[in-house]
Length: 605
Image (cartoon, rainbow, N blue to C red; front, side, top):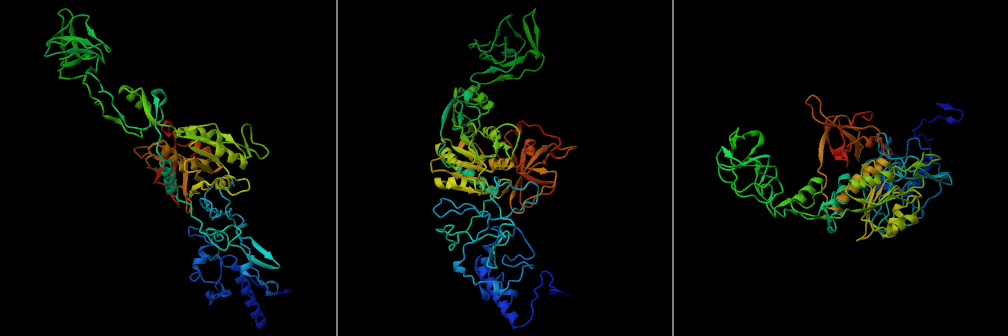
């Protein structure tokens, strides 16, 4: 088909006029493409024999192509061709006359515009780069730059650098520039360094728990009225027999020998009195619950099981009498020195009562971990309605009570805005066991958490987690004997994910608190999953109907910036990559207040 401008070329076709000049043009084009590809990972011309355009084959250049793919081995933005070096079928024809010779050795290092700064090898830990585009196939993607590292997009990662009419193509969408090697800097791209893949959700929790248990636990003694909620540093042993003497379990009559039994009118034994005289056979005496049983007592007859003949002064039993009935013998509950509860037990009101009964006035406990909360972000308001691009701070009011529910002693939140100097000062002056920051964990111009940690020489234990929401969370140790830092994303539900993934197991380890036992429950709905990452989805427990099993139902409003779903939840479902079908069992994380929360019905499901 022809037109006024010459032969028509269908999109994607490779039409070229025949002739020697055309062949020379093709060779020049191939050379220009080869040089452009050298900018993004190297090229072996001989490897491309037999393929159109002289491009390297996947099998012969697999190592090079893998360096431009997602670290999980998947192309996050699959297109018509999965070869990251393949030109789109609609790519314009590059004319040799306008393509200057490009020397690979002089070519500047091209990195995707969304890639974060990569620290030199002197940094204590290599920061996770922005190595993947958003895979989310569900509502509520982590799109807030304060909630995650900037992800490569088709716009930024696929941008071409045009010079004198020649287009040098940057890495394809979803790929990344080879990372810098040990000893390399952002200005020295010649030495590639592998970028670590973020740990799985389970792995990140294990790292946090191990870090919390890393140091020796301190021990303090607190009076009973201040020990509630702490963790026992030592096993609690009985200081006396319980009960410490034989006592009556009921109001009634203490009797000795067979009946009927004679008694004295008006006589009786009350709790809290000293020891009574031995009880002769054939006699009875009134006794109150908790009173010391006289020596030689055969049994206690409850008042309702006794028949009293006041005129003759005799007591008859309405039922057969068994030796020892309704008597609590000494040491029935425990003997002196016997372990009552082990170390690591959370001091509950019942533990306090047991300790008091066993003779304790104070308990050996682990101090509560001290936590400072630093709220970052110039866009946050402390009061009033959002306006002029400003939003209310939801995390400041939420984190303190949540962390106290995890057994921590929390100071009031400090709002620092986006000020790197203020952040550094707050970190270096803190005497807390854990510092929690909100926002600023991405790689934007005012996201200062990583640069400040780097400047302080902090050790990054976890830098990004394969979980949604909240994948840019981090865990760092400021110094070998200094505090830990948990960096939470700025989006509220993403911050909750960081609390449960990193802060909860870390605090449990520091406080000596036992880890939450995992359990599974049926989910009565299909829950969409992420292709590669774990998802944490707010759920509510529901009782089974008509003999059915109890189950959980996922809640709506579960986007990373939303709190409406988690406000109605009593747990989070751990959804493995790929999602789950209705009727499948999933692991459940209880929320700190879940045991006191009734099942919720309403508009959230």
